[in-house]
Image 1 (tube, helix red, strand yellow):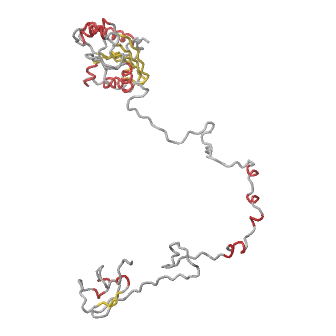
Image 2 (cartoon, rainbow, N blue to C red):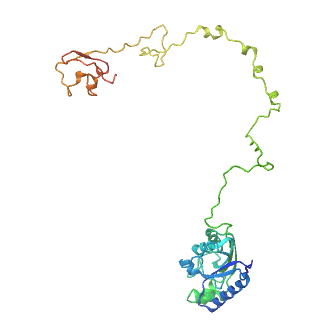
Image 3 (cartoon, one colour):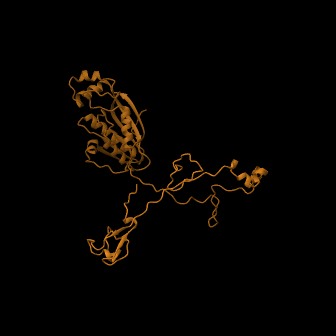
Amino acid sequence: MTFSHTAKPGQAVLLVARASGDASNVDALQQLRDSLVAQVGSSGKVDFEQVDRIEEGAAALNSAQYDVAIVNPAIPHTVEHSSKVLGQVLLALKPSGTLVLYELVLDVANGIEGLPITRTQEELEQQLKFAGFIETRTEVQPVSEAGLLELSEKHWKVSAAKDFAASITGRVLTATASAAKPSYNVGAAAALSFGKKAKAKGVVAGSSAIAPKKAWMLNVDSDDEAEIEDQDELLEEEDLAKPDAASLARPDGAAPKRKACKNCTCGLAEGNIVDDSEACKPTDKPKRLTKPVDVVNVKSACGNCSLGDAFRCSSCPYLGQPSFKPGEKVVLGGSMLFDDFMP
């Protein structure tokens, strides 16, 4: 797969690269720019931007301005594009715009000491997808030993460059990646229609709308009723006969089951077997004794005990009793006489 830098008339092209002091690098970029300008014509445009300025945030690319973006096209492709640069390029592309990018990658994930290249072909594709690009494709080609020697001497500044270049021959590859921007801009919004469904085809405007279909409905023309069995026919004559008193009697004249009475003492309440001849003798209720209260020598904290409940405290022993005169005999009863707990 070979990528040719071609553009259609009227297209807007973005050229992103690092313009070094190398004359060959500058000449290659200038030749590419002149070729693109001639292809797009007067109705198109070709803009150039430094990749370092995009990385530092000094250059802000306008949103959805370019049809094609060509990134790092000049040899030796030493730039490793960050997610920030890729995100800015994606933002600058129009919906469905295309990207052509060049970058040096490794053959395997194991890095090489002293080499600034860290990504593989698969990792470059993942980085493009993370940035938001779709339809990513890459093609790799090994860098020649002469190219590695030039990189080691001029760009990577490696000591013993010749030996180093020979040791990494075949491991450094030139990746040519192509990708596309989705058919929508970043942050685009689309309205969702939750209204009524459109009228069915064939309905004339102004006429009555077609009634909506029911989830289920009965078919009155079907013969399903003939297949339904009559429930009364499933019963026999003996099932319809009313029971007589003899059939409802207890078998063998068995006596009804006794129920334990309140305060049972015979053990029936505990489930014990009890002789039916013995009658249950419930315990007698405890007698509530009345306790006379000395109202002559009574000591009241409030002095209003004799006036009635409206003037008595919540813990007054006369609570619930009618009002009385001082010196009158009052008998307490009810819950005020006994403890709350009964053993």
